Amino acid sequence: MTTSLQEELRNLPPQKLEVEGISKTFRTKRNRSVVRALEDVTVRVNEGEYVCLVGRSGCGKTTLLNLIAGLDRPDSGRILVEGTPIKGPGRDRMVMFQETALFPWLDVTGNVLYGLKLKPNLTPKDRREVARFYIEMVGLDEFEHASIHELSGGMQQRVALARALAPNPRILLMDEPFGALDALTREQLYGDIQEIWLKRRKTIVFVTHNVREAVCLGDRVLLFAPNPGHLVGEFKIDLPRPRDINSVELAEYSSTITRALKGYDPKEEVAE
Amino acid sequence: MKRVVSSIVFFASIVLVWYGLVRLGIWSSVLLPSPVSVGEYLYHETIDGVLPGAMWVTFRRLMVGYFIGLALGLPLGFLSAFFRVFQDTVGLIALGFQTLPSVCWIPLALLWFGQTESAMLFVVIMGSLGSVIIATETGVKNLPPIYVRAARTMGSKGIHTLLTVVLPASLPYLVSGMKQGWAFAWRSLMAAEIYVTILTGFGLGQLLHYGRELHAMEQVIGVMLVIVLLGLLVDKVLFSPWERSLHRRWGKAQ
Ligand SMILES: Nc1ncnc2c1ncn2[C@@H]1O[C@H](COP(=O)(O)OP(=O)(O)OP(=O)(O)O)[C@@H](O)[C@H]1O
Ligand SMILES: [Mg+2]
Image (cartoon, rainbow over all chains, first blue to last red; front, side, top):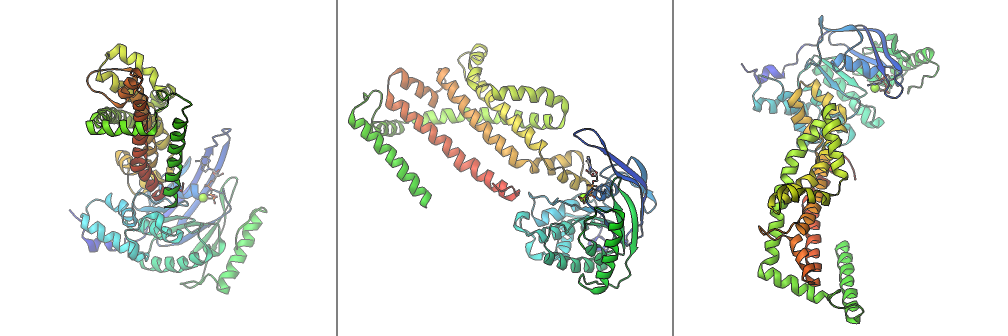
């Protein structure tokens, strides 16, 4: 049985994500000491909600995303998608990694196709159509056959977004996707990602260092603190969308949150 | 263009100095033949078909041995990158082989295979195998783990990940390993041809050997030139462009 192209291109409804009492420790390679990356973290994300995680380096944000993605297993606690515990990675949860994880040996289309090729019940022709659909969505139609190294950092992140959207996931996990980009490129992407999210509603968990970015994009902002990594607070952002990163209301929100973050950790250094 | 000119000027002046030294007559022409007589040797032996014949014999041995070396070395390299057991066994032997100068294989090869083509092949294979294994192992081990993780989130696993991610991602290292393996195969074969005098075919090494026996210095120098040129050619035409384009594409600026 094959899925028709129309069916495939329809956005699957987003799903609820529950992280229940997750703990995770690592042993360092050097002296085998224990790092408590996460301790008893509980997070609930509603279907279609955009949640941002903020906290200083080393507070376990990437660890949490990896656990949700199913790439690592927690020491204790469980993760549920729509009430069902996850077992390893799944196409329902796609990831945009902190580092560039695009495959340099494939061109733009090849990268977007990679996940689609692993999806059964699609004809090769439909897979190409689907890939083109998402490449167009992120605005790279003219670069379909470009090599990854020919693209700017911002364009590479667009490809990564297209690659993550292509298998039609219910949940999108984004780990500082714009961390390495300059301010102007980032501002452009804030606009684009909001627009895309309105069209392709996903449940999003978005990690960032940048409080302003979190306020601009999130429905809720969760604050993390390190040693051990745990949740210390949360803010609901009641601002209409699309939001402008330079607006005054947004600045007020972010200064409140930054102050709160500093309160939890005197060493906190976050970009406002 | 400028680089070509400076190369030409450099080599032309070497030949000139060489010619001048011969004309001064400090050394006997048996020890230092003039560039002209080396040129004549190369010209005549090419016309006669001796040099092309020897090149073909050498080339065939090299190809056969090298490809067997690759066919054994690449999988063994992968195995020792993935499995501790292989790393501690095969990997260790490979490291040992790599440090062993390839001439050292010749006595063993002669005792096992006698003066045969097999002895020749054996030396080439053993000479290149170690470096191919080591380079493959290093390449696979140094892969950024992020690629495999990304593939796993998209539903890839097992052999699919190996073929669609690990293999292409480590290609730049594999090519460096292949290049190194080639260099070692080439060295091994020359050593083998100089020491193993067989009648199933005269390679460049054997021409070199007989040049010495006959005190034909122009032959010795001529054949050495051919060997150097062939080595350069393979590097410049085959491996370097391939390596460069891979490195550029994979984003590892050189
Ligand atoms: N594979 C690992 N082995 C050992 N320690 C690890 C491993 N992964 C993470 N850690 C440790 O766990 C802690 C949390 O790491 P994590 O990468 O989740 O932080 P982060 O919040 O994403 O930081 P950043 O903002 O810098 O990306 C750190 O102290 C880190 O050193
Ligand atoms: Mg991180």
